[in-house]
Every structure is written in C-alpha cells, then in structure tokens.
Image (cartoon, rainbow, N blue to C red; front, side, top):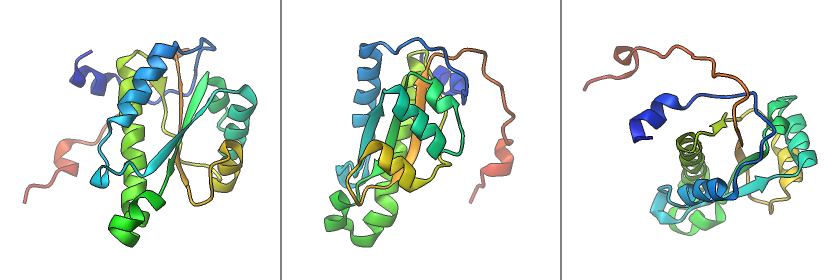
Length: 171
C-alpha cells in the first residue's frame, strides 16, 4: 500500500477475528514504532506487548468494559517514560514531550498495522492505575494509549470527517 492508501484505509475497528498476528508482522510494527520521531531523539516512552488472554481481559476491564481489547489477539500499551527527557527538557519534557513521544509512536504503530492489512483502534479511556497493574510498568511511567491489533471480523464503519475549511486556518 502506498502511504496515502494507508491513510485512507485506516479505520477504528472494534471487532477482531481470533487469528494470531504473524511474528514478522508484529516485528514490522515494532520496528515502525522504533523509527517514530521523538523530542531530542530521546524516545521517552515504553511499549508493552500484551498477548495473554487474561491480561487483555484485565485491560478491557480497566478500560470500563471495552471488551474488544480482549478480543484482539494482542494489544500494545504505550506509556510515557519522563525520566528519559527530564534531564534535557525539565518539566516541559515530562508534561508535554514524553506524552507526545508515546502518542506519535502509537500513531506509527497504527499506520504500520494498516499497511500490513491489520486493524486497530486507539483506546484512551481507561483507569491508569488498573492498566499500570496489568502491565507492571515501573513507577513514573503513565499509560497514554492502548492499541488492540488484529484482523477485522467485519468491514469498518465509515465515519464522516470535518471539511478542511472548517479545521484548516490560513494565516
């Protein structure tokens, strides 16, 4: 798929087949994450690969019953790692750059998955402490996104987009 096909074909999916994701496809997604731009190239984020069904169910429960997280064969949890940026950027690194780094990495994962004919949905509604307990990340890392990944079990629901003249402002 060319880049603009990837952009056009990316849709939020909340229904997945139980088919496992091929290891080489997961590796390509992880490689794309590692290539994501970050403030000062510090990569102030961590990614947790959640494969175990029980852990995915716990993530779904931590996300207030978004059961499709458990349905996907795996989920990635993106967390900030502000300790990697505080030395260079102080509080701006902690409060802004580290969350941005994690979300950019998540976006790269979404686009890579789409290019590999996999489906995802960005999950940002969850209880931080409950997610933290599932992944067991060190203190100081904050989860910012959960990304279930799998093969879609149905066609995506197409959603309308705002008109460009409503969201782009010439200066």
